[in-house]
Image 1 (cartoon, rainbow, N blue to C red):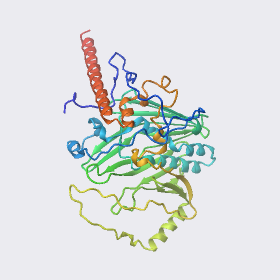
Image 2 (spheres, rainbow, N blue to C red):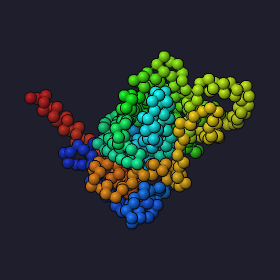
Image 3 (cartoon, rainbow, N blue to C red):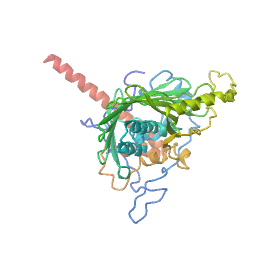
Length: 438
């Protein structure tokens, strides 16, 4: 594959003119009359956000995944043109916005006077930010260079803007703030995806920063690794793993969270466990739970006593079937794990995931929040930037269930990007050549 055949979704130039800014003004925007649950909102002028997509998810059963992926083993997937069958109808910029689904945790942290209590809620927010990835096996569309997404939620008290700021490597930056200036949350993400034969691993490089203005505090952390299993054979399933360190740079407090890998018998699947310590390294609270379900906080002594009692009562549950030695092409079976976190007496609930809509499995496993992100609300057209993801014709067509149009539009945008890249490279080389002779 030579450099001209290589395609990076994140690249300048949907426009063929001299402007280097992406724009979707040539896009065919489908039905401007938006609906909620298939109906136009009531005539009293009250707009309700939708709770479903215009069309259900299409079947992926007829597509040969192995035929495409066998040539990608060990490669970074951001450098490969991906068939639309892998996608979900959201841009990666919209996917980043899902970090804000549980913003109430930050609002609550702003009201607390104790730094350890604030850290508990910041930790819960960091964990909640990855909860929407549970069972989300579709890949978001890679943004084009200069693509943007803006979201304001008055009822939740924040606004957010994100932009694709680099083509190679593809980097997405975002900035969010509360409407009453209590906090700001910002960062940049460079997602590296690799295919390892039976699984796809995502490393979300980049630092998240949360600033609480009233307390003059700044917290930073990075997100855990994510792995999608059985991309070729068997049922797709997701795990998050790795250590996440949240640092309060004002007080020296630190929260160390361990997102546990599945393990041999699946006992640890989805589990997260950690502790909060002050600058003298004294442990104040233990955090435990599942990133798919809920998170609790408890005093370290109580937690350790409970663990000792559990060990004494014996762990006979290790009589799991170790069945089939996994052959080369066998699926990585998703463990049968109980999805309920057992609350230790004396624990405080910090966060619980919101239930997904009943039609979620037919809608790319979207949460209620994700369902609304690509919605064009009344009065948006002409007000939002022409670079906004909501105006992308390929994403809009896929959301509407028109896969053929979505695929054609994706190819059209890719070709315009290739042409723009060649033109920019030619102009750059020509400029350098002229300068060398002057």
